[in-house]
Amino acid sequence: MKELSDFFDMGGYAAYVWPSYVLTLIVVVLNIFWARRLLARSREEARRRLAMRAGGGETP
Amino acid sequence: MAWTWFHRLGSPPYIYSLAGRLTPWFAWPAALLIVAGLYDGLVLAPPDYQQGDGFRILYVHVPTAYMSIMIYTTMAISAAVGLIWRIKVAHAVAASCAPIGASITFCALVTGSLWGAPMWGTYWEWDPRVTSELILLFLYFGYMGLRSAMEDMQRADRASALLAVVGIVNVPIIHYSVVWWNSLHQGPSLMRLDRPAIQVSMLVPLLMMILGFTLFFVAVLLVRLRGEVLSRERAASWIREAVTP
Amino acid sequence: MAAALAEARRTRTPATPLLTAAGLALTRDLRLAFRKRGQLIQPLVFFAIVTTLFPLAISPELSRLRDVAPGVLWVAALLSSQLALEFLFRDDASDGTLEQYALSGQSLSCLLFAKTAAHWLLTGLPLAIMAPLAGLSLGAPAAAVPGIVAAVAVGSVALSLIGATGAALTLGVKRSGALLSLLTLPLAMPVLIFGARATELAIKGEGYGPPLELLGALAVLGLTLAPLATAAGVRVNLE
Image (tube, rainbow over all chains, first blue to last red; front, side, top):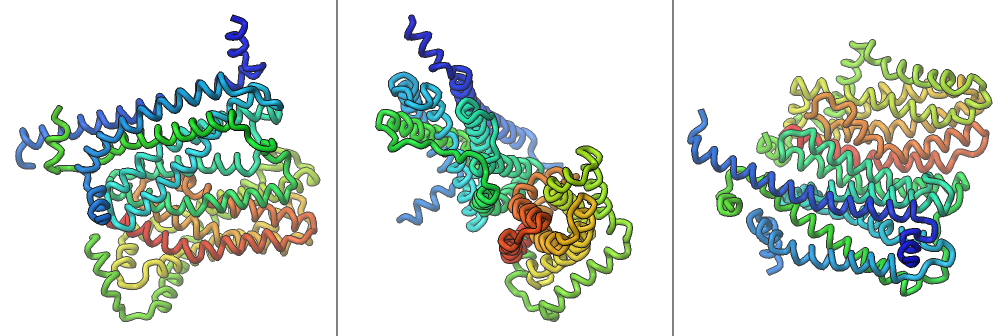
């Protein structure tokens, strides 16, 4: 247990090291999330356009 | 032979399916490398004789800083390709790079600041590399801002591509002008990690993280690219098959 | 429109020689600007006001102001030139003159360079004359005046050119003020760095040659590259 608490303490630099890693992790996760969301939205948009084209017919 | 390959890369349906197939080949190795690098860097690598355990920020700061510049270069090159040869896919690549690059540059700046605070006694320092990195962030924002301000996609592509290309000229200028500015001012402590040679046990996790982040960037780029390519195709016939689940 | 533009570039057999056309564009802009004299002095008044803000905000003591004078002068000059940029292409874009320039068969970069030159004559040059006065008011010694004039004159050339590129890129954007600044200011930062450095050395009475030469290098770089980028930006927004 002493070793684990030492690990979290990072030799006294915990306040600097852990926020850095957490921020980086958040940035990584956000990038994945944003990318997948963009793709999903583009697909949805394309599907909607196809449906309009099929159902709507000619432009007025 | 090489020419047909290049042509195929410019074809939106081909890129859409290729990117989809390639993504796991980058995503999983990236995840593995990053996890392994994290473990090696946080747990296995011995503490630094000068900075103790604080030096471990290196393992997120250096990869993100390196990526911030690598991504901008990728963005500028694909923007130039899109401008010169009028290839929509190239513009889509550039558009995909920007948000990734901006968030990673922000990350590099903050981790650098958190590293500087205990080591050099200040959260911020206007030294050449830090200032250039901040301006790089502004360039990313300018690119994304110009793109979002224009409604017509083609116009937005070409205008922002011009900006990206002009911006890359600016990057070395800014870096050198700030170097000269600082040296003219006889600025504060130069940012240097003085050690005789970087130990292998310290270097290996760093290389793993850099490679892991690079693969991560490509994986995210591929996903974004599919979305961007799709949004640039209005009535193309291949879309029907691609998006009906 | 895109086809017409491409056609104009290809054929390019105008009746007027290029230099005459560019000269005409320049004099047209100057003449038009002088009709709205009120608009002409606005950037200069802005410069004076901004410069005045600092003694009010920091301290009226000349000894303290002298230290920040280079920075104040250059930030104010940068912001003033930003203000004036919005007028560079706006009127011509709305009444179709820019399209005529693009379709004329003349080199668009040359015509736009003529417009940028007119812009510099109307804003950069007056700034170069006003800046030493502002500098004196901030505690600069009289001996610094030539240096300040030289630095602002050369630096404002680069600023006008960089700004023209930004203005061309944001042509189609409504209320582009903030976006224009976001695009132009990072590109203008090297000019700021060397300009402020030259001004600082001039105020201290030391040799300001090296930063001034670097400013000149930036201006030359702008002269060679900016007109091309500006023309490309205008074409993108006209298509």
